[in-house]
Every structure is written in C-alpha cells, then in structure tokens.
Image 1 (tube, rainbow, N blue to C red):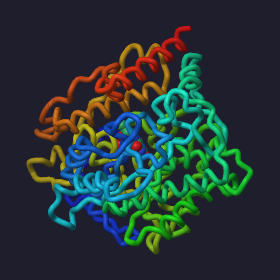
Image 2 (image 1 turned 90 degrees about the vertical axis):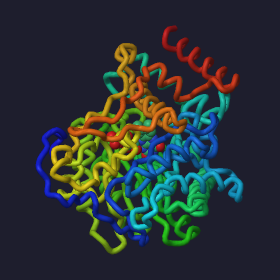
Image 3 (image 1 turned 90 degrees about the horizontal axis):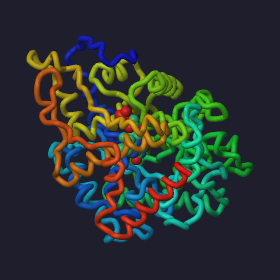
Image 4 (image 1 turned 180 degrees about the vertical axis):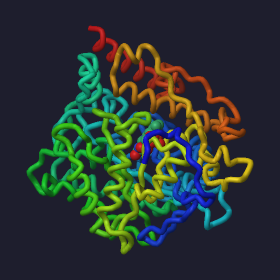
Length: 485
Ligand SMILES: Cc1cc2nc3c(=O)[nH]c(=O)nc-3n(C[C@H](O)[C@H](O)[C@H](O)COP(=O)(O)O)c2cc1C
C-alpha cells in the first residue's frame, strides 16, 4: 500500500468496502467501515453515565452509514479516568444505572430502519492504569498514585522533548503502585461488569482497550511489566485470557468481543514486532475474540494521534502480517486497521491487498459523521471524479506556543481537545458536522474555528461549577509554577 494518499487511481465500481463481514460469534458487520473509539469528553467532570449530549452525537454517527460503531473508552474504575469527563461503568448494575447506556445504544441505531444495514454497537472498556493523570484522573488532588502492572512511571521518551517536557510528565503522572494479585482479580471483575453492562444495555459487544499504554497494554510490554508472578513475562497475556474467559462464561452468545492492541512500539526495551505478532497468534488461538484492532503508541510516544506518516504505515504493514499470521475462518478473529486512513482509494487498497478486514476511522468521523455513507455510495458517472474523495480534513490548530513548548504529549492533548470540542458542538446542536456536498470533495459548511487554548479549556469546560473552575485554576497554576520556576 502506498503512503501517498493523493495518488488517486481508478477503481472498479463494486467497492469491497460495501462487503459484509461475519464475526466468529455469529454477528455480521454490514460493511467494512468502523467508527473507531474516541473519548468524547461529554460526561460530568469526575466521570459518569452518558447524557443527552452523547445521545445526539451518537445519533449522528448512527445515521452515518458505519458498519460498526465503537464508543469512546468507558472506564471500568471510577478512580482511573483519562481526562476527567469519562464515561464510567456503574459500581452497581441496576435498571436505573443501566438505563442511560440503553439510551446510548438506541441512539446508535435509531437512524437505521433496515436491520441488515444496522451498525454493530460496541462499548469500549478501559482502565487507564499508569496513564491516569493527577487531578482529573478521578482521585482528586490528593488522591495518591494510580495502579499499574508495575511501578514504572510515565515519562517522556521522545529525544526531542527537553527538560520542560520531563517536568510536565513528572507533574501529570505520579509513579504508579503495583497491583497485587487480589487487585488484579478485582480489575478483571470490573471488566466483566463492563461487559455485563454492555450486554444488558443491548450492545452487540465490547472492545477491550489493550493499546496506547493503558493498564492492559502495560501488561503486554516488557517496558512496563516487570512482574515475576503469574501475570509477568512470559505469561503477560494471562490478564487478557482471564478477562475473556470470565466474560465468555458470564455473557451469553452472540456477543462480539474485540481487542485493540499496539503494533510493535519500535522503542528500545518495549514490545517488538515478533512479540506483538506472537500475542496476536496466541490470542486468536483461544477462539474467544471476534476482532483485533491494530493501532500503536502510548502517552510517551503518541503515534496513534499522529498525522499520516511513515510510522503510521508501520501499522498497515503490521496488520498485514497479523492477518497472514492467523488462519482464516474457523472461529478466528478478523483484523481491523486504524490510523490515518483517509481516502476511499487507500481504504479499498487496504482491503484488497489483504492488510485488514475492517477499516477503523477516527478523526474524520468527527469532522464528517456520515463519512462512511459518502464512501459507500456507488460511483456514478457524475461522481466518478469524487469517488476517491480527495478530501482535505482540516487539522487542529498548531499554535506558536506549542512549538516553543515542544511537548509531544501536549500536541496530542491539543489534537484530542480540538476533536472533543467539535464533538461537544455536535452534542449540543451548535454544529451538525460536515457533509460532503459538492464535486471534488467540497464541504457543505465550514468547520468551526477553535483555537488551541480554547480547545484545551473546552475539553474540561469548568464554568458550570465553581468547584470545577477551582480545580482547573489550581491545575494550571501548578503547571505554570513547574514550567517557569
Ligand atoms: C479525540 C480522540 C479521542 C480518542 N479516544 C480514544 C479512545 O477512547 N479509545 C481508543 O482506543 N482510541 C482513542 N483514540 C484513538 C483513535 O481511536 C484512533 O486510533 C486514532 O485517532 C487514529 O485513527 P485516525 O487517524 O483515523 O484518527 C482517540 C482519538 C481521538 C482523536
């Protein structure tokens, strides 16, 4: 597959993107296009259930022609949030606590009357582990350290980052404490409760977030798993196997279970391509998974949020190897590739050349919630020129202060914040998202202008409550003291 997404080629009319895919659990994905998991930042500060803003946002995606909709990560532990406004699995499952998730699930499919075209609905479950930050991580200001596979703190590994970056990492991420065996048992049960929540709310399945450096991913990498017990190397997959065994024993079929894993991290001391492929081979052999999504990076090296780049092409090469490494059919999971896939030509080649079975799309789905519909439209004489969508997806702002600070993680945060600001607008009817309106991939209306600082502030939106405002002011004050002392 070429990395050059602008070299449009003429493709035959029938697009493989329209083909349905059958999952081992018996469920069917009606087409190849998947809205990848994206944290929405729409729940209450401190974590909570989905609300009317989520319902509006997901209804737009529900109308967007996607074969599968994966929710943003839902935290299984309220003391381990990502950026503060996370969806959280309720501590007790009751009709009242499940009801908002039922509404979320209904919003995802309300737009599709044709049952054969109905998107599969997947709840992504996560535990943020060592990447759970101070203050907005759910433990308050003095809430102590998060838990992780081993006590390895998150620190900048990018050689281009300087002292300021090291300080920022040190401030944001306290050294985590190592989970005991009993703690791990409790974490496993939290994931099982998340799967029960998904099932009882009517979702078609769940996805375990085992990439991007969060808790499960931390177990898979020799950089962050230094354990010598039954969860350490060479048995680093034990936690995943235990979670899957427990979920399969608890939730009736058909229930789709996916997992998102990192391709090799290409960082010294971290997971290698061979190890990552071994993981995929072994996980597939358990015959408990329906799909494996390939992504990459963590907070120390946030490749998953990068723009199209040669490193992103690593994911495509890796997913091809992954697809080849596991036998097809016979209860084997399908492979989903996510990251910088933008145009119909590249997506079509990805499927045709055997790099993946499913195409994961993140950021473009925020700009254009019905992008899948547009991609799936059969080409006509009139639209043939547009068929490969030479679409310019607008980039988040790149303010001068970001270049001065030169902290990769803040760049990633800004990218996330900017997309969350757009999701917030969609969830509040301030903006409908774009539709591809005219020839040559023109947009129907402009994307709102949102600056860097504004995007970061909107990520937390402190203004409805004095307490939240206070927390944010303290956060920025502490941050400023560390940066400039
Ligand atoms: C705003 C935002 C939030 C994200 N949240 C999640 C998440 O909750 N879970 C996850 O697995 N990946 C998350 N990601 C990563 C995306 O799923 C995807 O892997 C990444 O954006 C690369 O795909 P893309 O180039 O199509 O955007 C997020 C990305 C963005 C931009």
